[in-house]
Length: 116
Length: 114
Image 1 (cartoon, rainbow over the protein chains, first blue to last red):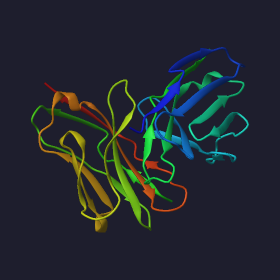
Image 2 (image 1 turned 90 degrees about the vertical axis):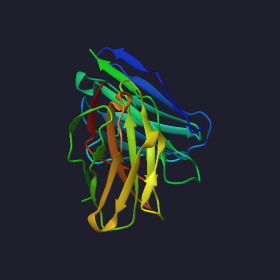
Image 3 (image 1 turned 135 degrees about the vertical axis):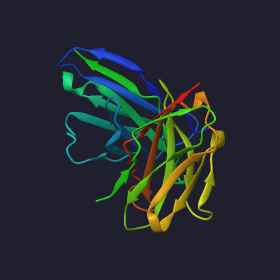
């Protein structure tokens, strides 16, 4: 149980285009999802907390207009990287917390974004 | 500010050796503590967690961790590592109430030699 999927697993796009990444909780409902960014050989950096039916909460230094987050249902959150640039190339990971459950996050497999 | 420190960035062990990875946190309130493992090319998996009760918690794959409140530590241990334990290990801390945000340590890359 508590499986989280991400789609796509990798994407290559041209500079200036937008890319959408989906995060789904497959076998549970998640009122809260989290989006992280992981640089090579580094830890996870929390970008934002996504709450179902409300606006996401962004961490300091994360541009909310560049990284659009939508948590439209209890099983789906999306991250859209708008006007992507090469410096946005990274590994993006989502996690989900079981609605009403203990304070434990379950992680997706990540999405490798490469911006040319 | 809240922070999590993992002192060992890279660890190399031979099979059957014992493992201890350090994790210390800085936070004034009550916390939940976690260890996650990331095998090469795979997603983060929960190894074990501490919420309350017995400070010695046992997780999957023979791992255990001990919460020492006075030292703000949550060290991960395994008595005998295997080649398949080669992975990156992350300690994470979150307050017991509020935003449920995790604070991750920088990770420890473990390599086990066969």
